[in-house]
Length: 120
Image (cartoon, rainbow, N blue to C red; front, side, top):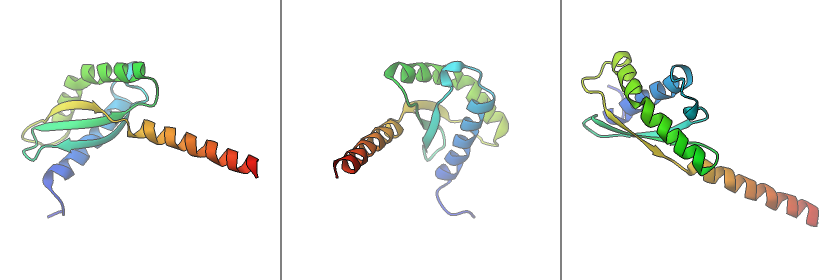
């Protein structure tokens, strides 16, 4: 048997399927540029919190959330047909600001490097 909890292994597969579906099957322009960052699947595999990130303004995050909520039924149906699961988890999309904060930190570090190089 594979190492690790079943919820983690199944969650990783579900996350890959969702990312694939968003890239290839979902035609909603609101979800373009959305990055899936993680998933937390309950131990009984009935509830999934899928974390996503969008680099941009707050309006883009709201549009992406609306687009993901709109595509939720389609995504759930596709996961059901692609994966052999007894229960298809109830999916909840949650915004993850970690990529945005990382991008902001990288910008600050770059500014500090420019000041150090110019000041010496």
